[in-house]
Length: 245
Length: 247
Image 1 (cartoon, rainbow over the protein chains, first blue to last red):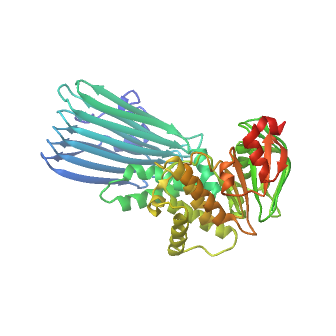
Image 2 (spheres, each protein chain N blue to C red; image 1 turned 120 degrees about the vertical axis):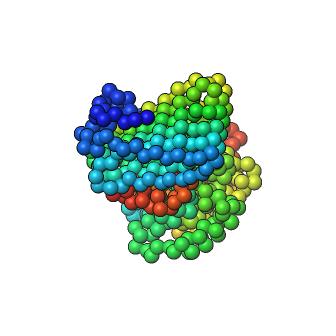
């Protein structure tokens, strides 16, 4: 899919919650193409932690039986947008784990479109976002199952945690299914840290800040499980979380 | 050790405790029994400092401190342990990780040196063995996937590791089979039966009291203690029911 030379507006579905002012100087964004041959396995970790605004457009093509593991830590100190379009061949597997953090007045977003173009492909998306201050975290994710892509197994597990009443989380998991024999699960929740769990930890002696930190670390870690460089990613996520709290 | 005077408390603005008084001295085991809705769990939560459980009148003194003025984690550091009726599941946070942090946060608050990783694991292993809980279970996320009985035993392991002065145990016996009941009862005795420690057992039934012999039994009804006696009171309740005994 080509990128239009004209800056999108909020009417463009994929840019509905985007920070267009921050996006303007980056537009048009160059598309990064990743092509996996049949049976090929590859993993990629993206850590978006800089001070400047970032927008990336990834196009991933998975050949038959290929497997792509993508892990994303989207926690810049400015606008951060990562868009991923993946097209899955027969029996291909696409795994995405993404942790997003937004504090201050930042907008951080992940936009995905996963197309099951052939039968028996598997897609897994686990997204854990944390927003504090007046920050905004977005997830717009579509799973498209083309006609004939029977045996599709797709899942989206999307959760966002709000640390302050002034923070925002937008989540829109979407399914478009044109085949019959399909298993697509999606779960989506926006919430606050469980006060019952916080009290339980406090009752054992943990100061509230430490209890909160432990729970948020665990929450974010769910998205980074299985990354090739899981430990490094987790350390960076924890550091970014610390900076935000 | 604990002195509760005329305690009134509300939950979501609804009055639950209505003038409860109770004194517990070091070395004693007290049992509070009572019908559903009497305020037993509320008492535990008010002592623990759970948000939205509000003491509106009266006082609670614990080891010379005004307990109600302390935050929940400060109450823990002061030596109060609350055993939960329904221990909370916390995905992604392991028992060993959070207990070591908890134990050391308590030690720091008391001006003691922190436990090293090795010292902590030795202590945890010892207490897990006491409660016949597989040490590997403590490496798992807090209470996640634990059976009712395992959760209660894990509560007692935590109590053993943290070494409180006063344990308030809210229906530790519920959800336990006969063997687990005995193991928990013996665990409570091993950890808490000491001249400088005390226990407040909140329970519906006599059966836990067969293992942990109380010095005093109180009947809580309508937010107040309506009768106090020795261990024989529990037997009387078991035989005649709350209505007859509390009336």
